[in-house]
Every structure is written in C-alpha cells, then in structure tokens.
Image 1 (tube, rainbow, N blue to C red):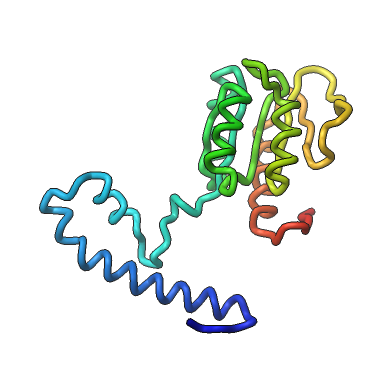
Image 2 (tube, rainbow, N blue to C red):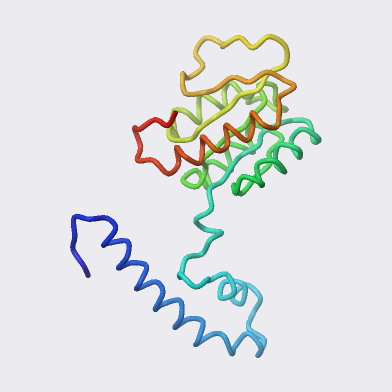
Length: 187
C-alpha cells in the first residue's frame, strides 16, 4: 500500500490496482459469458469498464418528486441529459425510501411542495436537509413563491411552471456541490 499525503498519488495507486483487478476479472470471466453464466453475474462482468470502476455505482443520483406524471417525466428526461441518474417518485414516502436506500449517491432533489400522501415537499425538504445535508434541493410551488417558515436555508424555492433551463442550472449546481468537499459552497 502506498502512503502519501497527496490524494492524487493515492487515487492513482488505487486506479492502477483497480485496472489490474478489472483486467483479471475480464480475462477470467470473459470466456464464461458465452458458456451460459447466470445473467446477474454476466451483467456485473459487462459493467466493469477499462478503469475498473462500475460507472452505474458511482453515477450521482437525482430524485424527482412530483405527484403528476407528466411534469415528473419531463423533469426526469431533462435531468438525465445532465448525466444524473434519475429516480422518479410520486410521494414523499417513496422519496424518503430512496434516500434511505441510496442517500450517499443522491446529489439533487427536485420536489413539488404538494405531494400525494401524508409527507409533503416541505416535510421532505426538512427531513432531507437534516439527515442528508449535502444534497442540493429545489422545492417547486404553484402561485406566489413565498418561503415557508422553517424551510432550511439550503433549499431553493422555484415557481411553477418552472423552466427547463432553470432545472438544468440547478442540476449542474448540484453536480458541482457533489464534487466539492463538504462544507464548501459553489457559486
């Protein structure tokens, strides 16, 4: 193991080890793919790329939380264009379950204030900001955009109908924040 105070050296050594491991796996299992390996194992082998990193496992995630199908799908399609993996949820409860399962991967939450079920967007925003403070969040609302009392300062308010460009700008901001060490802000 290489010990260094320079993260680039440590990361380079890890990548080199991962490259060797990836090539070893591909060489060993490559021929088995034609011999009828179970699909779940075959897909894992196929997902290993040249640098040994499973891109699906490292791709940042966006949660789109909206009770109406059409705006939820539109937001999801736009966010996919930014490189974020998208999970669409119709309720605050579904979004919370996704956070509990993959919270470390979530970079961005785009949620409507009015959701189906008992947990509304305001409650989801407070919960997410408390338990996953590094996630960038936008809360949308119809009508006048007034900041509700008690809404965490980190949550951005956006009026409906929202503009696709505004959503993409916030997603890009979320990706920049996800790449920053915690506690730093990105303008």
